[in-house]
Length: 261
Image (cartoon, rainbow, N blue to C red):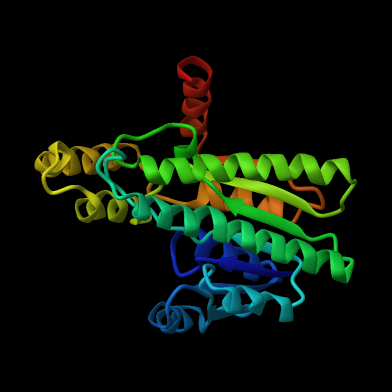
């Protein structure tokens, strides 16, 4: 199969791509910047079946690059995390978080779907959401809300494709907390999105220390529990809707949704 993974510079997306390439599939890993791509090219030079190029999912001309690749699978992993208090953040910053994580992701899904349909391919669409879409996290609410929106969109799309007996499938990848560095960047960047005259800005240092400590306790050191599940579902003819890991975090998310929502 030909597979494209957005946001593939490192972490879960890179490891999924590497695993699929080693199993004989051809994988395109895309990055947001040329600098990321240059580093990734050096990283993958000894791995066959892996290729890298820049693709900014917010740009139409970049999204259209996938139309020349004859893909069988799209894994849309690209996303950003913007921290900060909802009451103090500027709406344009929340809007930017939605633009990348939700609207541009939907644009990618629509483009890939119509490409699969045009080529009569039973393609597979995967979208990386997060267990954070189920469990709201204070000062990370903008990110959590985008992931919750993605989950609802993809679940609805799955039902719509079922109604028309489409051979094209769509699935959700819902990782918990893994030590990829993404959470730390999101926690640390919230300062620039807080109102400097607000209550949360004055308490930012204490909150940052607490959140970093909390994630240090709960984050899984290895990404393999989610990587193995994603690779297994990509190779299936009919992937399941939800791909969640690690087990105890996904169980905790279910219990939270059951008792506290």
